[in-house]
Amino acid sequence: MATTVTHTVTNQPPPLTDRNLFTDHLSLVEALEREGGGWARERCEEVGAAWGGEPMDWGVEANEFPPRLRTHDRYGNRIDEVEFHPAWHQLMALGARHELHSLPWTTGRAGAHAARTAMYLTATQAEGGFACPITMTFAAVPALRAQPDLAGEWEPLLTSRGYDGELRPAHEKGSARCGMAMTEKQGGSDVRANATVAEPLDGAGGEYVLTGHKWFCSAPMCDLFLVLAQTDEGMSCFAVPRILPDGARNTFRLQRLKDKLGNRSNASGEVELDGTWARVVGEPGRGVATILEMVAHTRLDCVIGSAGGMRHAVANATWHAAHRFAFGRVLADQPLMANVLADLAVESEAATALAMRLARAYDEAPHDEDAAHLKRLGTAVGKFWVCKRFPGVAFEALECLGGNGYVEESGMPRLYREAPLNSVWEGSGNVNALDVLRALSRTGERTLEAFFAELDEAGGADARLDAFVTRLREEFADPEAIEHRARRVVELMALGLQGSLLVRYAPPAVSDAFCASRLAGHGGLNYGTLPPGIDTRSILERHTPQGGAARAPARHTGEG
Image (cartoon, rainbow, N blue to C red; front, side, top):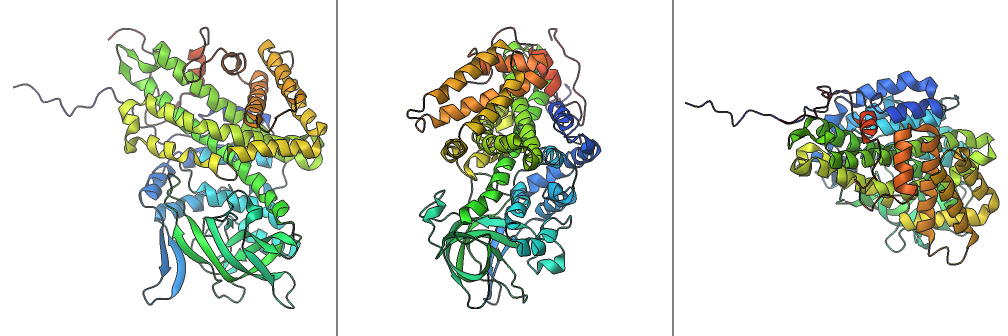
């Protein structure tokens, strides 16, 4: 009788588990040293090891058991609470322990933004949803500093390495997390159309009551929220706590949770404010300017998170292709698949390089005018471009796994659903493209020249980059209908910046592939269209994970 072999598993890649997400990301390791965060190398390795283990499973569980809204308790009392799976709280606690929400505010060391960026980019490969409240808590600090008394009260709580997900007084917990509620039904990104009204309390300086409805409230389970509302002076920014100073619950009615495409581990909702107590942040009438301090940092995290997602996609695709045989050869050794994988790897490395360079600009901006200009312009450019590239990378990487990639167990569908979020959140593509034009109109030649000075750091190193930068300058010589051309201009700016970084710092195989395909026009519209002559083997060796349940095998180039 023949031996039954139908249940013998062959030609499947080993699980990509229990690996260090930082050390096997070589372009990130190099960028950490280059951009001023080398002092945090050991911390980043600890983060990489931690998040490459159990948190990969926590992310799965937090998405399989998404948050639930409880508006009332069993007796009919309004409670407005959001219940989460324990895995969510584990993700949040680990993020706090690693100071993903606070590092630049709690250390005086140069390069703190670069160090934090490397750790955030690493951790979000396990799960993207928990990063939303982590980011908003991080970004709330510079906004609150516009109101020193509020900052003095809340900053120690927001930057604490502790975590307590219960809805109770923050000072009892010793920690707090911050959310945001800006947009409304009638306005969306046009927050100046907001109808929420703030009325000052008599004899209480800086205290108001708010009445209105917020269409999107990010992370409604947080302890504190930054909210926009209309005052007599105009649009103003307010801090709204869930728990009042006397220990009672503030009026913060959660109407429903959003049923989202992705980001399902995290809660987003609609909130009704009805006589809700709040304190003004910054100068009344300048709420948009105040909240933009928060928005700038959340947009930076959109870039970082998208770069992290790209790395996760590329790691899974290259790992699969390094272990899967078809038609007599390992997939990664087949020229067309190698072209696809290398193209994706180049995109990922370009995103990582840009995210880390922006982080250095944030570190240097307080004492360097050129860095401040690059921070302002580069954040909007990077937010537009990198976030838009992530969905395409996620899809193509999914396809590299074939039918296995379309199955939920692979994790690729979850990544694909998550991918569009960062481009939508904190200003869609048009908003960021127009923000670039707004920055240029307000600061003129100085900001643009600071941007080109960064590109010119690679001047003379690659003729294709030089020619591209020359053409890019010409885009600004023709101001006619520039708003109509804004998307094209901004994507060219992003390509020029990424090209300059890769020419300066990436291995020749990577920079050659980027310049040939993205700058010289020798690539196609799809991934996997790198021109002949590209050293795809070197690129794949650089980007294929070397850890996990089993190490990548030696290349098999023979038949059978």
